[in-house]
Length: 354
Image (tube, rainbow, N blue to C red; front, side, top):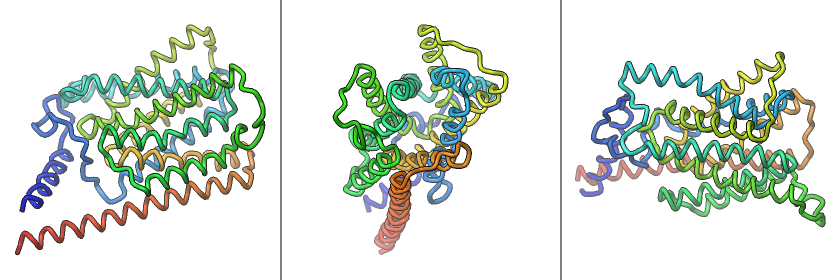
C-alpha cells in the first residue's frame, strides 16, 4: 500500500507541474522544484526535442561556414544578441499579462544566472578551441561531455549510470572520433605539442566540462522555469561576455551586407535550438540528451556534402553508423523502460484491488 501511495503522489505531482502557467506566484508544488521529470505529452517527446535541437544546431553550424567577414567569437556574440532581442519582448509580454517573475521561480535566480554564465563560457571555450586546434580535434575533445554529463548527472541529480550508459558513451565517442579523425590519433603522433595546441586542448576540455554542467543545470531548473526565461539569461550572458572578448582583443568587424541575413538566421536558429534543448532536458535524462546530441555531427556531414561538396571518408561513414546505432539503442531502451513501467503500475493496481 505504501508503494501505491508513493506512486500516486508522483503522478499527482507530475500532473500539477504540467498544468502550471507562467506565474510569479507558483503553487506549493512549484515552490520547491523537483528533479523528477514531468509527464511528457506523448512517449518519446523528450527524445524528439533532443533530435530537433541537434538538427537546428547543425543548420546553425552550416551558416557559420558561410560567414567569412567576422570572427567566430563575434558570430556567437551576434547570435546571442539576436536571441536576446527576440526573447526580451516575449518575456516582457509574459510579465505584464501573466505576471511572470523575470527572476524565475523562488530560489532559482542564482541557478539561472549560473546557467547563463556557464553556458556562454562553454561556447566561448569551444570557439577558442576551434581557433587553436584543427576542427576535428576540437570536436572530438568537446564531445567528451557525453561521458562527463552522465557522470555529473549521476553525482548531482542522482540519475542512474548503468552499464548500458557506459556502452553508449563508448560507442558515441568512438563514432565521433572516426568522423573527426583527430590528428593526435590518426596522424602526427610523434609531433611536439606547441603552446597554441596546448591552449586549444585545454579550451576543448574546458568546453566539455562547462557543457556538461550546462546540461545538468538546465535539467535541475526543470519545468518550473519557463524555457524562454532560461534562454534569456543564456543570451544576455553570451552577448555580454563575448562582446567584451571582442572588444578586448580588438577584433570587431562589420559583417558584409550580403551576410547580414546569415547573421540574423544564426540568432533565429540558435534560439529555436535552445528552446528545444531546454524542453527536451525537462523530459529526458541529461546523459541521454548528451548522447542524442551527437546526431548533430552526422547531420553536419550530410549538409557539408550537399552544400559544401565535402565528401566524407569511409571512416566518417563508419563513425556515422556508430552514432546512429547509439540513437537506435537509446530509442529501444526508452520503449523497453516505458513498457516495464506500465507493467509495474499494472501490478501495483492489481495488488491494491486485492
